[in-house]
Amino acid sequence: MRKKIVAGNWKMNNDLAQTETLITSLKKQTNTSNAEVMIAPTFTNLWQAYQTLKDNAIEVIAQNMHFADNGAFTGEISGGMLKSIGINTVILGHSERREYFNETDELLAKKVDTALAKGMRVIFCFGEVLADRKSGNHENVVESQIKNALFHLDAAAFQNIVLAYEPVWAIGTGETASPEQAQDMHAFIRKTLDSKYGDIVAEDVSILYGGSVKPANAQEIFSKPDVDGGLIGGAALNADDFFAIVNAF
Ligand SMILES: O=C[C@H](O)COP(=O)(O)O
Image (cartoon, rainbow, N blue to C red; front, side, top):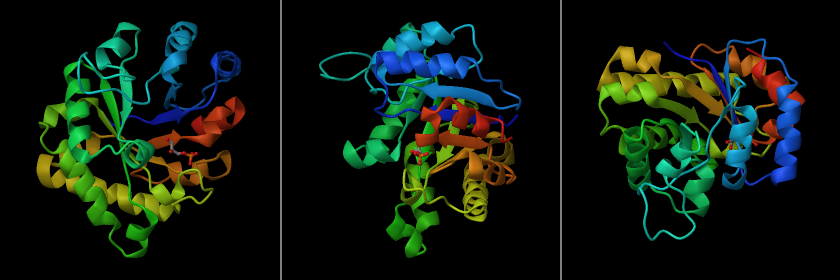
C-alpha cells in the first residue's frame, strides 16, 4: 500500500542548539493528515534528535551514508553506524550529493544495496537539470537515473524504497514544477517501474515531489494522484511551515 510521506531535509543547517529549538517547536505541532513525517538533521545532531523524538511519530532519518560497512573512508558514516543509533531510513542520491560530491548512478546503486541489506528504508532522489527540461530530455534522464541505480533490484526490494523526484531547477530556487509537470513525471516514473516490475510494484511505490514546496503550493501538488508526498528543504526549517505542508494532505 502506497504511503503518504512528508520528509524534511535540513541539509547542512542547524547546530545542536538550533536543532533542539526546532524539534521543540515540531513537537508542539499536530499532524492532522495521514502522512508519515520525517526529518533529516545533520549527522552530528542525529543522536540528539533521535533521543528527543523516539516516543514521537516523527521519524529521524539520515541525509546520506557510505556503501562500505567500515574502513579507511575518512569523514564518512556507515549504514551500520546509523542503525546503531536507531536510524532506519536514509536519503540517497540527492542532487546536491550528485553535483557537489560527484555521486554517480553506479555509486548510488552500491549505497542502495548496502542500505537495503541493513534493513533500512531508502528515499532515492533523482531529477533532471534545467537544460534537460528545456531540451525535452527530462524523461530520458529520469528513466536512466532510475534504471542505472535501481533496476538490478528484485521486486521485493521496492517495499523499502521511496522515490523522490526533484527537478534540480526547482530546488531552493522558489521555482516549483507545476502540479501538472509533477504529475506527468510521477506517472512516467510509475510507467517505467511497470515496464520492469509490473503494476503491483509501480502502484505501491510512494513517489515524493521535491523542489520549492511551500505551504502555499503544497495542497495543489499533493492533490495530484501520483504525488504521494514531498521532500522539503527550506520550508522544513520552520516548524509552522513544515506542518502546514504536512497538513496540506
Ligand atoms: O531535499 C529537498 C529538496 O532539495 C528541496 O529543497 P527546497 O524545498 O529548499 O527547494
